[in-house]
Image (cartoon, rainbow, N blue to C red; front, side, top):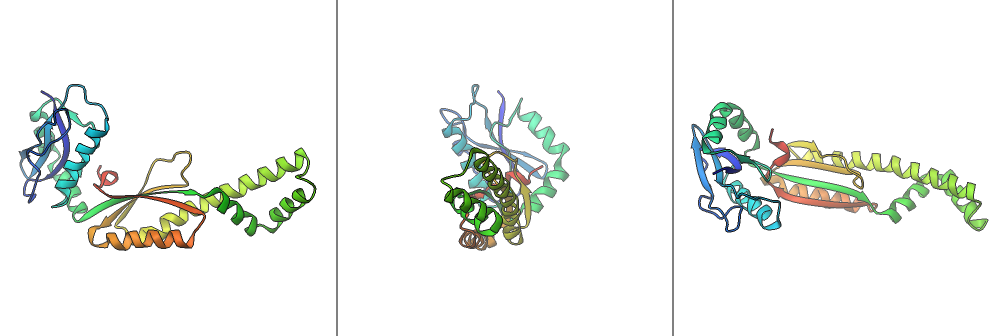
Length: 238
């Protein structure tokens, strides 16, 4: 039977959720696999595991329950080992490294912040910031919209101005929040986000971090911010 892995903790972790329902239908009971100074939260792996909502929630719930009482190195969904013996061998081989990462993550959680622009607000802003662009737009409107070439030139200028604003605002999001974080990890770039950044935050500063996000939003009405957290520190586990 293959072994499904949720996360890794110290063997001295005060409260690991043994026998809690994990992934699978019916849910496989979670068990603790100890090796040296480490312990892995595992269960039997379902034969046909897929990223269904129920299993994703189960994976997250196990990590949230364990993480509430102490540091846990979270595995991403779908981590499967051939058997318990293989998991134990990796824990033994990488013990010092895992203990170092657990020490670095003690008392910390992850917040992911994604930012986009409100299209109408940022358009008003780039026009307000650029007198030449504003005059060109006004001239086109005064002439009934302008010729095809005039519309094209105006559109290209506006797109370039918005892109510059995206780069500036993306940097501003990180700079506004990194002072409240212990560590920062940029997420993968994707179309639609001008910022996708994960922040490692001390639990005792979580309220301060959320308040700083709210302050950032109030001062930048052109931004649409999406905050996800507190999360297990996925982005800060090597």
